[in-house]
Length: 195
Image 1 (cartoon, rainbow, N blue to C red):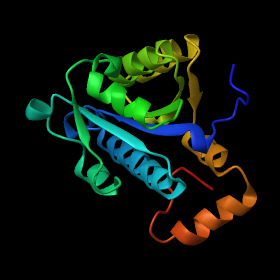
Image 2: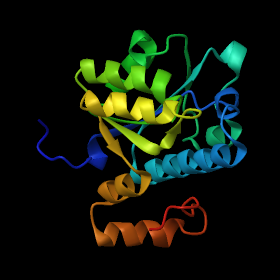
Image 3: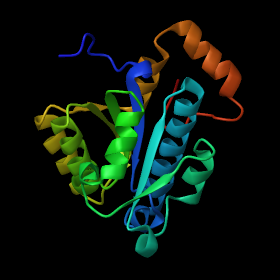
Image 4: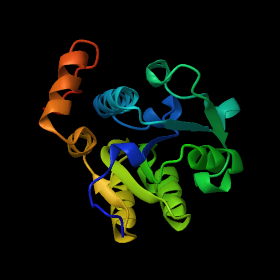
């Protein structure tokens, strides 16, 4: 069991799974736009907080790379790993990138909740990582989103909301106020997230 049940910003690595237009397109338009906004915002928060990002896209040649709005939000030079298995732990290069981050808590966002997100989260748990999935920054069409979250929660994966994660990463009123003072113009929270 970790020393703290809270998610430590200094032990976190942001894992962006298959956030590609082909998968976003399966969602209703409003849901798709909100999910893109939430993931983009969390990438920005991670950059501000010094949280490394490991980003992947499924079968890039066939499905394209990550959504352009998300690619633009990443740290410059962040590689987009090509993923050909549903669970990322089957990809030697991606698993090596996660281990190279030196972080032990994988915070997962992306698509689809019940397939690649779930299989990646479960695999990382088996590999000894602490795993947290951001419930309102992952998606699947219809009831499959809830099924994926239920499966992961039952396996012991932390399921957290975007706002809750933000405040765990901030850790204090002063740090939160500093973030808001520095980023309110360039990185406003997405609709539905009130800081």
